[in-house]
Each structure stands twice: as C-alpha cells, then as structure tokens.
Image 1 (cartoon, rainbow, N blue to C red):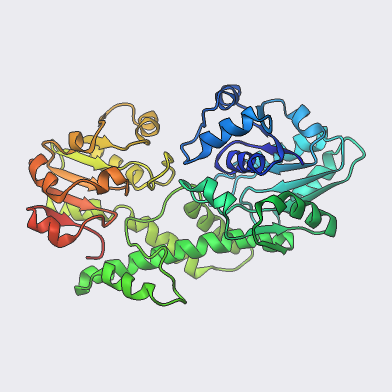
Image 2 (spheres, rainbow, N blue to C red):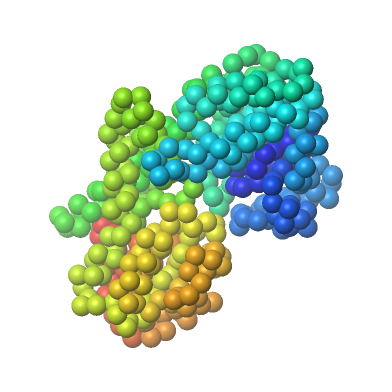
Length: 430
C-alpha cells in the first residue's frame, strides 16, 4: 500500500521504516531539509537500535523515501499516518498545533479517497476534531476518514516494539476504515484490538499512566523501606512472583522520564480536571515522581558541608539507557542544582553528551569514559543504567575517587560489595 507518514521523530520515523520493512511503499515527510538529507544518506536523526540498518535496507530497495514536499507525498497516498509531536504545554495540556498543521496540509492536497491515521498521543476526542478539521479545509471531492492507532514503543527498543508488538490498537468509526487498517497491519502478523476512536485514544493514556503509577508506587515504597529498614530489592522480588502484579516496572530509582510518561500523566490529569473530575492516583504519581528526581541530591546535601570546589562525577545523562533522549531526565533536575552549589562537574554518557552539551555548552567537563569522570572525584552520582556504568567494579570507585562517595539512582550495585570495597554507598530503598 502507498503510505505517507507526517513527522520523523520517534513515532513517525520508526513507524515509516517498519511499514516499509513489511512491504509497504512509504514516504516520510518532515519540514527540516537537513534532516531529510541526513535520512536519505542512511543516517538516523535519533539514536535507536536497529533503525539505521532498516533505513538503509528499505531506502536501497525503493520502498522508503524522505521528503519535505508534503504536496506530492499526500496527493495520492492511500493512507497517511500522523506521527508529529504533541508536546506538553505549561498547564499540562497537549499542544495540538503540529497535528492541526499536518491535518490542514492533508486536507488541502489529498486527491484520492484516503484514510488518515493519528499515531501521535492525543487527548480523548482529538480524532473527532481532526476529522472535522480536515472536512473544513478539504479542497477536492474525496472521502477522508480518520482513525486512531496509538503507538506503544519504548525508546531504545522502538523497532522491536513495533515489529513484535504485544498487540496493535486501532480505533475506527466505520467498517471501511477498520478493514483498511487491518490490511495495512496484516503483514505484521500480530494481534489486533479494534475499538472505537475514543477508546483507542484512552487506551494509550491508560496504559502509560498505569506504568507511571507502578513506578511511582515502587519509589514510594522504596522511600519507606529506607525508614523502616527493609530492602526494596527483596520486596520487589517477592512481589514479582505474583502473576497479578508481574515482574516488570518494579525497579525503584530516581523517577521516570522520557517523552511519554511525564507528558501523558500530566495530560490525563488535565483532561480529567477539564471534565470536572480528579484523577487522584495519577496526580499522586506526578507528585511522587517530581520529588523522587532530586532525592539523591538532598541526601548528599545532608552528608556534605558544601559542593563548592568539589569534583562531582556524573555517570549517565539520558533518562534511561539505550537512547540519546534527555527529556525529563534526572540529570536535568540535578545538574543545575549542583552547578548552583559550585560543583565542578565531570559528566559521562556514551550517547547523550552531545545533546546535553547543546543545553550546557559551558560549565561542565564532558569526558569519554567513566574512569575519566571518577578520577579524583569527591562524589559520584549515577543517573542512567548504561552497561558501561554497570560494568564498573566496586573497587574501581575506591581506587579512582579521592573520596569514594557514591549516590546510585539506579540501584546498580550490591550494597555489601560496595561497602566491602571501601565505598560509602547510597542507593534507593536499601
């Protein structure tokens, strides 16, 4: 099928590449000419496992192309997927301006009957508005239907999560739209859950916010564990055997980040308030997460007289391993506090340093290895669970650091082993 994809961020680019991989002819549309040139050369603008290889393979096979010419891309597409950003606004609501721009461009240029599919995460009821918006600006006498098809990919495993998804959610208001989406996804050979558009929109938020709740709950329990002398690792292990709970998302740490959970919890909270309802559980998850991100800084502040003039090693800048994404990363909360306190920061991240340098070009030493960050350091903060950081032996902290004082936001180490190595070690919930 001839498919166009609006937007080449995590959602749009991964979707477009995976559609091409299963045999569809795909054109990815972006407004950035430099980005399009980069992608045509086989280079991904985002760090994502497996993505570049599939980009190169399908571009060479003629199934995948990139362009800024949305007029040509939309003109005769059988289906157009909208995968543009819906960033958070100051009040917590989703910014739908990029959705509106793509919808109007589609309306003014499509010249054949077409299914428009919104993959972006949008508030419940947005697809209804998109369909009406397209009808308002439609130029040619063609039939346009809008469907919802939310994504459930995780950054760092996005390609696998698309090609090997647990299920595909489609939300439609007609049998024709349902049949076309079924045809598009048939080559994936995956379970498909077909519901109405508003239910599909809500499924996305309900899933993400449930996982965010699970993370915040475990962080809340971890903080209580510290006060009463329990170990959150033991608690999580005991919980994991209960099939009603499951083993995933039980790791305590310094809060959730990224492009989805923070934004989606706030958006659903906003939607509830706009409808005169309070989602108390979601609000609690937001509050717990906000406090959790700086819990290690607060611990260290109680332990130390000052950060002024101290060499502080930062291990990990991205919000999690496997991505170069910094959105809502704990490093963005803690490093400004450390800088304001006069710390000399030496930061290591295997892929995220360049992005962080765009925000903080001065005042931070960016190093090429964990050891370089640790050498002579007075204190170390671990913010990301990269393998390169996990592989550091406990004794290396003792040998490399001037004062082996480690604050681990990912619980990467055995507490007893760190203490045996002579490291003063603080983690979460232990």
